[in-house]
Image 1 (cartoon, one colour):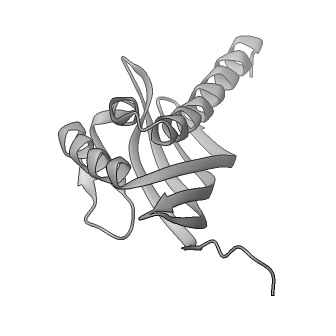
Image 2: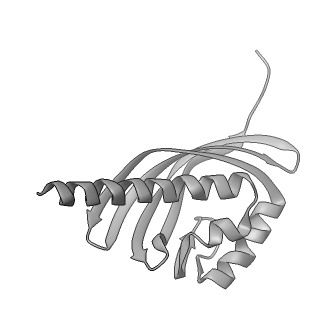
Length: 142
């Protein structure tokens, strides 16, 4: 691998990691357009507890509903990426804090992602969320 190949690989990896961070930031700040713009035009999102959503217009409506109903604070980390030219796959782990209907919640899981290089840069081709748990945060001591 040449130095320029190594540099290109490192740039691609960092751009994909930034994609996941920007997604979390968009959800945190309730920026629907920001979240939707990180997907390919025919991008696909599967949150596991509803019908999967495909395409930016349907994604926009889904995010308007999701972000409007809850105060979500996602933290993403341990991002593993496998590059293959203009395509890549990856797993990005999630710790989630939220307020839903006035109740504090805590969760953990991961995203299974497919990435595509586009004219806009790297975008999500698909995201599948797997939550291991999402439960009320009980405060207090026994």
